[in-house]
Image (cartoon, rainbow, N blue to C red; front, top):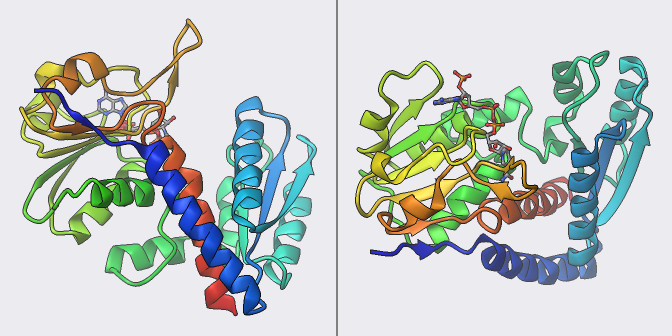
Length: 282
Ligand code: NDP
């Protein structure tokens, strides 16, 4: 069997098309969604992500502002900016690009963002709402995964879902979202004994570890749906996921590639949350 490729690039492009039309309609009603992106220092990867976010905004008609602060900015100065953006009517969503430099307490900054403008979905109030199943801003990467599963026609009810990784931005929230769709969820991590025992039971396997090609074909069940969140830069400069595509794709029924799977969905979901924030604040 050869797996169906879940084409995140194509799904993200079609979602962005839908959003472009939605933003045009909102503008007719006098609502212009606005996103502020704050970047501190000059980490090359962060710069690339921020550039992609600006491009996504321009493409869909979302107003955006970028704030570039020097690497040695104080926590206080950054908090002053966040507080200013919290009450700025042009800005519906605020995003602090992570990681932040050492002198800044990341939590303090994330918690200072007005939860109504927390389009990354990282504020404890929004995470709490996710836990109890209330309407909220869903964190972008796991939200993107759920849309990929939905658009690929995968019914999660009663399925065994296994998530490898328990980070606050991917592993934990995707586990909750899979649970909310009535999957039976197992969360694995670095202390899990016999990882293969768990991954082999998965109807749906989500790998969010950060270890290139660690999930091999022999670790999965025939016909599993495999979502590869990993983005790892190899020595030869190429990107690799957490899943060994070659051996897994011959056993899986569906798989996301890297690049072109989960990655393109993350920023698309950020744009979606910004539009949602604009509607809610209007
Ligand atoms: P973190 O480093 O925060 O978390 C990694 C998780 O993997 C931890 O929970 C860790 O366990 C677990 N882990 C580490 N080694 C093993 C192992 N040998 N067996 C089982 N579990 C293990 O990573 P993130 O969640 O932030 O990201 C994961 C990957 O996804 C990265 O490659 C990242 O680049 C990518 N990513 C991609 C995004 C996209 O848009 N496509 C967005 C965000 C992330 P423990 O908790 O015990 O330490």
